[in-house]
Length: 379
Ligand SMILES: *Cc1c(COP(=O)(O)O)cnc(C)c1O
Image 1: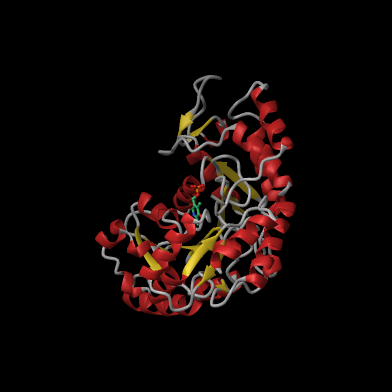
Image 2: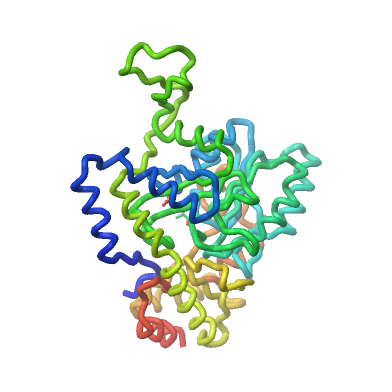
């Protein structure tokens, strides 16, 4: 089976991990801060807080932004469920914004409309989580123009988009958001095994996320309400979690980060080949600036196909050894969110995208022969 995505691991990655295994620290050693500094530097952000997954980082981001019961979080109707679940972890209500079915990204007109309605009914969100689907950044300046008048805080779920640009800024620079989250799961653009990070330019948010990542515990006397009892002392200031990244994972992440430009160029080259060679009536996802897209996924669409016909096609492609996939089932379609009152029909753009889209194999080490095999199977 040609997978839809997979990691690219080379000897320098192996060496980096082995070096940590032979060192004094497997976790909470020097590698996590080094990885964090390199991430912040690569993206042009002030701070990076690494964790054991993007799901954890999204949770930390929402906590740091004081999202809680009685608050609302909005996110894109098409994403991985983690983009929404972070709101539920905080006890907030979650609602969705429809997408543009041609790009898979949040639809700015739908957002503008929903904001207007919500401001009239007093149901505005505290936090909006935007998603850069497939590695294409949303127009963040346009999002800010819509949300700023209402004081809505912005989190970018950039799990697909490390290395991408929004036109003028790097994704992760947080030029237009409070916090930007990356995932380092093996299928994502670069991997640490499992892992995530939250980037921000706000030192208070960074400190709060770092505190909550490790049980809400500090060893810094300056942060304690009273002088420490002795040198052994630590103070738990808030109810936190164990969301720490290990040094093993950070070493792999750091090694991979160095190769990001090369890995991304290889995915962009393959995506351009798909774009040129997709047989009719397939069409690629609409990517405004391919040179700015991280191409975590290659999504192709069949205009007008029914969900039933797509299921049959999906099955036959898998039988031919083509590891197609689907990113994503609209989150409001999930039984959990329907039980909370969501109605899939309220998101026609998401439903069209769901019917028409398929993820084709794309990963840095994909060969031209593999790409040809996928195109042949599509024909
Ligand atoms: C993969 C992914 C996540 C979750 O990432 P983990 O690191 O596996 O927790 C969240 N959001 C999106 C959009 C993703 O693709």
